[in-house]
Length: 308
Image (cartoon, rainbow, N blue to C red; front, side, top):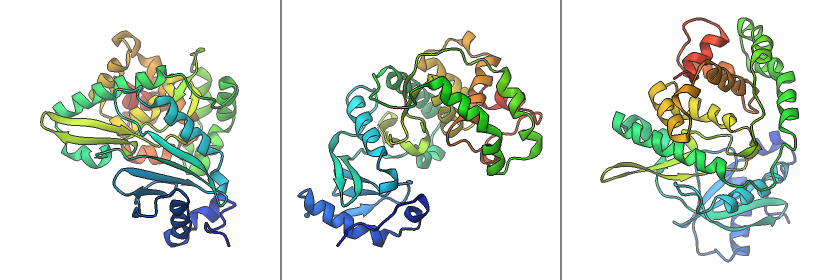
């Protein structure tokens, strides 16, 4: 009798309720010798993630996402102790009843997204500095064996599908018509591929209020990690951390290692180009939550979101 329900497709997995997964969780904890621990599912996240007692986290991967187990575990091993902000310590990983799992230490704090409304300007300046330094350290860390094998080929594939991807997301025609020409004019250069988080965002950062202000207490969620151009990670940092706050983004970038001279119009255009080419790109959604440009053009959008 299987403990975990069948989930052979993304649609089947998304339809699963927590009560269908819990028997598998209980059986897996028994297998791991953790039957004395209570397991409580976190309310957010694309994959089932459970707090196990007060010090462990169990992340589950249904069969359709089984290939992501090695990515999560490999990046946790690579990053442990290397960043100026904590990452989880890998405890155990493997497969059970057709599902993959990663058991790791639990990081303290609340998500930056929940704490953001409480932050003062001084808090934000300090966090921007810390996050820029942390992202730079992540990019300096030797990457485990991650794809894509050919970054240039990956970008060409993303470029070829860019209009279709945004059209499917519901982007208006006036924006769609600009995409091919905009991408054709952006020069990406030949940057050395680095370890990328790919979703460096408030929801994946933990913070805690301390006596002298807010401290970053964790970075998590590495199953989408890749190897590629460093500026690909600035999509998340600009949109999902800075959220259009130019002063915050500039401070983060300077802490990362950019000079003021490097933060020019072409830099902003590259960032928007990577936004359009990102595997999770959804420009219609970003246009709803990010500041509006002065004009309805991609050049104006690049300057408003990534210009500093």
